[in-house]
Image (cartoon, rainbow, N blue to C red; front, side, top):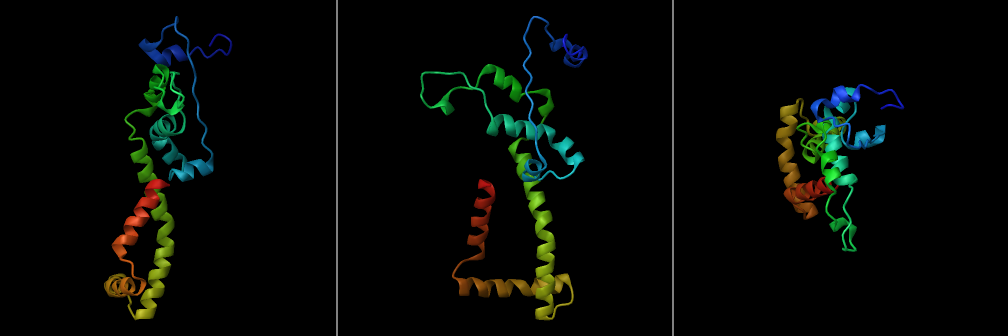
Length: 168
């Protein structure tokens, strides 16, 4: 603070500021592609997701651990300093991964809707339907027929896709 003239930090930290303690700064930078992977597309969404992004990167992407005799570093306990980093006020009441999964779900749905709309319009034209409800009403019978032809159930395919999304 003395070297850079950032004297505002004690005001930000308030009563938590202790001149006798060392301060470590932790930053993460997300590029546009990284944000997209979390379903974040706009500046407003990035601001809203800041806490959840912080939770995700400090829990799943990067950790700081206290060494033990165990050769497997992933079993070393999180360092007390890192637990403080994970609980940073930036995080707020972020839901962490759950919030990110919801963002990804919204992003995937947003990308899927134009494709789905195009397919449903083509489907409606082929089966002679003139509206959404009529087209959707004709779809279940054909999907059930396709289950028989393909020898794979719709529910089975849905469960498989859910697993894929959970692993992504």
